[in-house]
Structure formats: C-alpha cells, structure tokens
Amino acid sequence: MKTTFIDWIKQSKVYSVIIAVTFLLCFIILSFLLNASNRKVIDVPHQAVYESQETSSNVLTMLKKGDRVQVLESSNNWSYILTDSNERGYLSQSTPVPMNKKVTKKKKDTQLAVVKKENAAIRNQADDTSELLGIAQPDEEFVIKSIDEQWVSILYQEGIGYIKKDIITIRKGSAKDIKETIKDPVDHLVIVKANQSALYSKADYDSPAIESVAREQVFPYISEKEDFYYVRINDDFAGYIPKKDVEKNFSTPNKDTKRPKSLKKATIVIDPGHGGEDPGAVSNYSNWHEKDFTLDVSLALASALRKKGATVYLTREDDSSVSLADRAQFSHEKKADAFISIHFDSTQEDNDSTGSTTYFYDESDSDLAQAINQSLGQLTLRNNGAHFGNYLVLRDNKQPSILVELGYMNNKKDVKVISKKAERKEIVDKLLKGFEQYFK
Image (cartoon, rainbow, N blue to C red; front, side, top):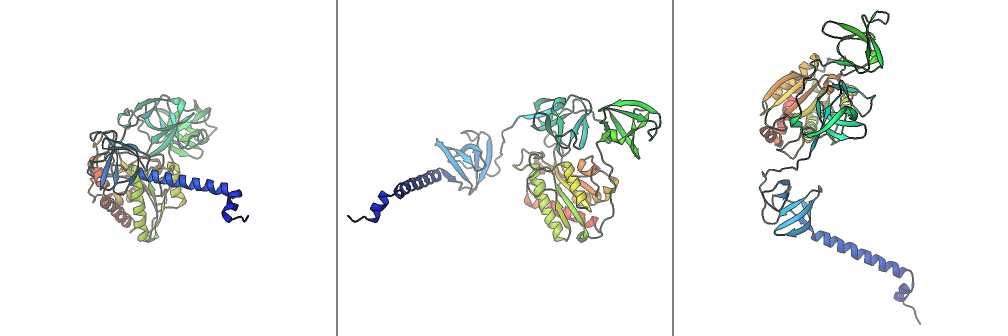
C-alpha cells in the first residue's frame, strides 16, 4: 500500500509535536483575546479612579484619554480596574470627572526617629567610618525613610542621612508634627572619635594638658592651627585638640573665586535635588514630588545654558539617588565655575510660606547668590532674598555654590504656578539671565 505524506506524519514522532504546538498556539491566542476583552481604553479627556463605588470617595489617580486599564470585575455601572502603574480602584462607567478633580492619595503612616542619646552622629552612609554630616541632640526628630538591623535612614538637610538604630526611638507621626527643639546655634562642631584624648593649652603636644576628654564629647570649633583644632571648652576656656582624635561636621575648603568673563567659557554643575528613594517634599496639590520638579527644571536649565555655549554637567539626569557628599565632590571633580542645587521648599503647615529663596554658605559665594536672586525677583512668585544656608552641598563645596528654593510644595498657589510648564520655563529663563549677569 502506498504511504501518503499525511500517513507518514501520523506514524512519525513529528505528529505529536505538531499537535502540541497547535494546542499551545490556540491557548496563546485565546488568552490574548480574553485579556484584550478585559482591556479598556479611556476615551474621554479625563477619568477618575475612585477608592470605592462612590463618586464622593477619594480619587486615587486621574486617567487621561488613551490610557489603558485592565478590567478585573464589573457590576452596578462600576469597573474594578488595574492601571499600568499597578494601582487598583473603581472606574465609573457613566460619570467622567473634570480635570481639576482633586486627587486624594491614601495617607501612609510616617515614622519619626526620636534621638535619645546626646551627640548622636548623623552619617553619609550606613557605616561608622563614613562622613559625619551632623550631630543631633536628645529629642530631635527626623522623618524615617528606611530601617535595617543597625541603621535608620532619615531625611536630613535636603537629602538622606543615617543614624544608629539603637540610639533612637521610633514613633508614628508626620513631618508636620516634628517637635521644635532647641538647636546649638554653633554650626561648626568637632566630636571626639578617640577613646581618650587630651585638650592642650597650645597647639603643641609638649604643652600642658588642660583636661582629658572621652569619646563622643562635642566642642564648638573656633579655628585651626597645624595639627590641632582650637575649640571652645566652656564660656571661659578654650583649648587645642589633635585633629587625628576628632571628626568635624563641616569643611573649610579654599574656594577659587576667579571666574570666566563669559558664559561660553564657564563650567556649571547643576544639582537636581533629591531623587530615587528620596522624593523630597510631597504635595497635596500635585501628583509630582519635589524630585520630579527639580529634575524637570534642571534638565531645561542645562539645555538653555548649553545653547549659550556653557559647559554643563548634572549630578543626576534621571530618577536616581545621589548622596549629598557625592554631589559636592562632583562639583570639585568638574572644577565648576558655579554650582547650583535646585529645590522646592516645604513648611510644617500647608500654605504657611510662599516664594523663592537663594542660599549661600561662604562669603565668596555671595556674588553668585546675588546675581541669581536678583533675576529670580522678576518671577510671578514672591522673592524672599538671598540668605546664609548651612547645607552640606554648600559648606563642603570648594567651588562657588548656591542652593535655590523655587517655591513651596505645600502652598496651593505656589504649586499652581510651578505646575505650569510656561511658569517653569520662566524660572529657567530667569536662572539663565542670572548666570549671564554673573559671568559678564
């Protein structure tokens, strides 16, 4: 009997493979069709995702025309949906809402670190040997970002700091109810890191020792001489302590104040504040966090400066985390003629403050601060002037540096201005004008 091609396939091992592949393809196509039938494309300008099946409930997020969502369940003119950003909520099948419908985010419990030990070190990394950012006193409180076995990361000086877990207690709260504590007005402090050290009457190991001091004692810094820091012991006495025996919460860089006479010859480092795990200030009046606005303005400013011929670098160009120390170090590495850190401010109470502010740390930075501040004074937002600011990215910066706060994230009117693309362009234009004036 003659064997046909079909008979050969049936008798061979190929037959079972073909059957299996056919079933698999059918399954994939069927799954795709079922999934597609559960997809919904938003066909109105704006649509709200609600917390429950009530239009009076909280709006979790706003969808725009063309957005796709997966419908998990439908009943009573409501669809329970999953958005592309993995948010679940209820979509009304009959009631679109206007664009200005307020989005109410679910409030998450915030944890606060309450310092229980005197002279608690705040460090740049979760490491005893990393840079000392500052010194906290008992009852000072900080917003917690994360917790591990030994360290707690906290919001500190427009960035992230780390403090030992065993020297704090943790309580629930928010940034708004952080206790006001009396802080030492002295900015420059040294903390003893040696198990035992001596305070000398002169900057000389052969001079008489005034007293012996233990580890973690803190003294206000006065000046330095050779291998010693001159520190205040109390209101009546001062002494010298070896530099090798202490850490300091400040730097004393020698800034090069020479600057090019043209923007085309200038090197500028732009620092978009916050980023990554650190969102910065959040707002009830915008879906954007501070880190989003700072990056948006920084990228636009970089583009504008480059068009004018300046050499420009950014400390971050995406939503990534960069330590405060690395931002200042990046400025040194690029030998910046100017460093600007971009931020948006916040207060403990909503709508308590408004406007832009320019900060500088060293007197050699004041010309840059004044040039930028004068230009920002022409914005819609109120101008609060140029002021001293004890920020690590400024005090550890060897290059001319400033930090600008371009409005308040928890001021409804400020955020309304900041949220407009045209207004952010105006901010960029004024910053550009300030740099042109500075490098004339």
